[in-house]
Length: 161
Ligand code: ADP
Image (cartoon, rainbow, N blue to C red; front, side):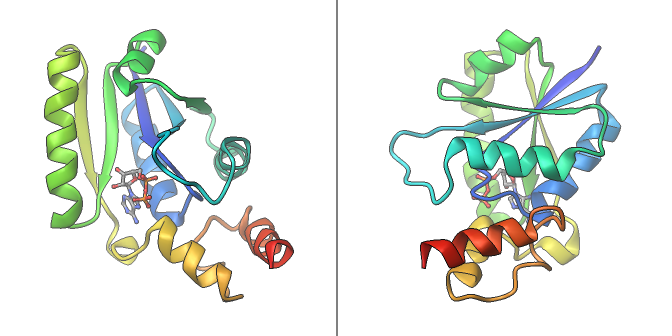
């Protein structure tokens, strides 16, 4: 059984994330999407909300499960018996940070590989921050987030004012 972990903050999950998760689910037997908590970072959505949005968005993919973790990614991977970490790459800007992270993770656990999957062209400029920005001004985010959660995201921002 080859297990891969897809880590991120997913604040919230976008169509770009979902595309990477779907493609990873075809390469591995099981994919665990994990919402990582970075104590130094402020998030718009709670861990529970972010996990819920990912669960809704991936409900139709049988070999994908969702979890959250507030420790080291490599410890999570070891605990789950994962062989790889899957990351999406949008542009050169992602590359430098991800390249550094993958080398650090390799140092922490040489058994686990980092696999990079290129963004689909149409999602190249899509990020969670774009979604938050558009939604906070009452804009339509349906083209940016999985359709299952589009209404919930919009309502959440209306409620917050
Ligand atoms: P963000 O950068 O949007 O806050 P995360 O920290 O949740 O995203 O990122 C998790 C992973 O998803 C990272 O590897 C990131 O490069 C990747 N990713 C984010 N958006 C996209 C996209 N539109 N296409 C491909 N990969 C993406």
